[in-house]
Length: 113
Image (tube, one colour):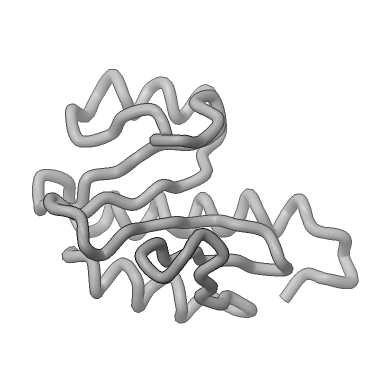
């Protein structure tokens, strides 16, 4: 999976939208007004910040060199994932969906897609 594929996946999720609240260089993906993914498409190698269950986040960081604590985010709840083909597409897909699902679960029922 490359960055355009990851972005396409983010946008394909129900109720997801792309915004640029931090300026045009940072793409922010939200559901129900809450962030579930961020990326700067101008960075190399490409990276994406994704929300993650704290215990899983720690385990992923130990297991994968390409997953680090969330850059400029709460390090307990966010991971930065390098999207440079060092991780399987299935894992990146799973991490994006996990992030989205965590945010959707935190929304009031009326706001859930």
